[in-house]
Length: 255
Image (cartoon, rainbow, N blue to C red; front, side, top):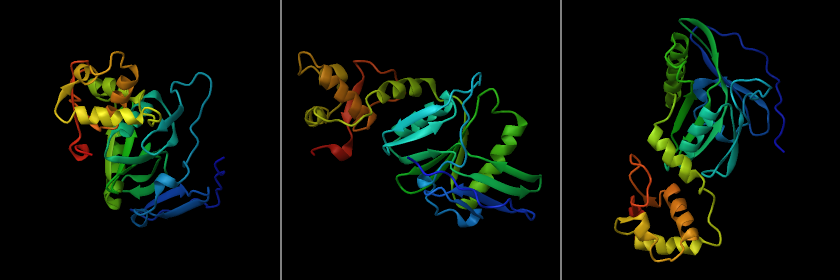
């Protein structure tokens, strides 16, 4: 069971043009520090800075997503946010991600402001992306864009990247949603992966890759798992079909 959050800090009094980050560490203890000192904090190990509400009649649909990239369960606030979690999980440049990592508390030329970013992403190279997921019908509103500008400026202080996103690309989402059903680790069928990777050292269609087996149900599932892991590469801009060409990732050839 995760530790409970322990709030002990009083609200801060901001001077002009200050920016702080308030968060809960892995033990649930509240922390507060100037943003320019927080770049090295491992927010991916911290507790969420707030609870996501769940009540009858709400418009958003909260839930939990199991991330294969880090073998962790992450709480989401809406189906749209869950979509972006799945896309991040598929991204080979993403090591891990967490939701509601902290709260920005700042003062700028327009006054005091606070903001809970949606997702904190740690890439495999150690860099950070902060992501806000917004309803496409709301994303262009002046208030939302003002929030995005403030958050982007805060991220520049930390040498982080920042994006505000709406609906993902339909074709990319359709492919990733399908492959996500095969994202769990291989167990008894792991030995099949070596055969498939060997056969796909040159581009080959999925149908041809599976033609070695008369009833390739298991082998098809392993193929999709390898595509999820991007051990088998393919054109993400095209619909996924049996005639889709796949090929072994260069770093896995001859292994």
